[in-house]
Amino acid sequence: MNVGILYSRIRKDEKLLLNELRERDHEITKIDVRKQTFDIAEAPAAFDGLDIVVDRCLATSRSLYATQFFESYGIPVVNSHETADVCADKVKNSLALEDAGVPTPETKVAFTKETAMDAIEEFGYPCVLKPVVGSWGRLMAKIDSESAAEAILEHKATLGHYEHKVFYVQEFVEKPGRDIRVLAIDGEPIAGMVRSSDHWITNAAKGAETDVFEIDDEALDLVERATDAVGGGLLGIDLMETADGYTVHEVNHTVEFKALDEAVETDVAGTVVDWLEEKATAADPELEVSAK
Image 1 (cartoon, helix red, strand yellow):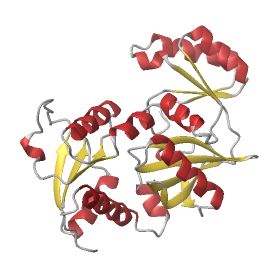
Image 2 (tube, rainbow, N blue to C red):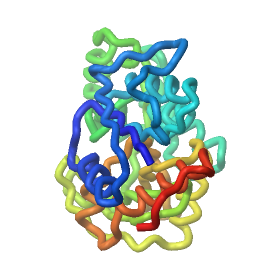
Image 3 (cartoon, helix red, strand yellow):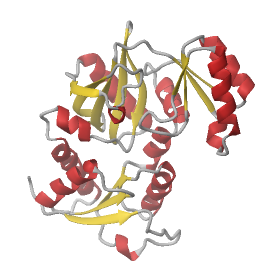
């Protein structure tokens, strides 16, 4: 099959996928979104023959537009634009989880400094202020006092982009120095890991230590339900442990998996490519894919 890799930078995650695809003799079309143009009327000639496209864009805006274009061209893309749209925005993400009855941290959204301050005061200290769009734990703030809240809100209010005028305020969850990442395809876990750190942000990108997480029945149920809530696909579901069980604080749609690949014995890239082959043949039953 001919697999399009939509990217803006080739990281270790993409290299793992590319190596696996090459080992299976699949044709690869690398699409650098920074150099590509999209026509609203017809697909560019560079996309001829593509059986499936994998969105690995770093920039959210590019991911959202590009996935919509591929769907309009009739080319299967993972993840779908619907899933990307929900997962890329923390407000939409939280609403989807809440509407599906998936336990998720209490969250409030405000559009002015004054109402954001009211939300923070309702939570009490500490609480957390997050950007509505972002990854790797960037621009997240744990707010410990009224003076800190005032300073951070003032700073965000003076930034130019409208997204900074959306104040996403969340309860601070007292987790045991770690959180959990489960990589799943259409709700079926590939593998899980714990990310441990002395810092309150436990992202692997922030230097957290990783180890294998044995997925229990409760976590499995939440992974399936969270996946359904955002529209399915290749997803990273992030959970935290609380006194009342797990809570799902985020679902990621262009998920990185290099840290997971190093932490577990599972062939992560191989399992992902197995799924891509299934997706491509489901879209085109005449497509022949050799068994690994």
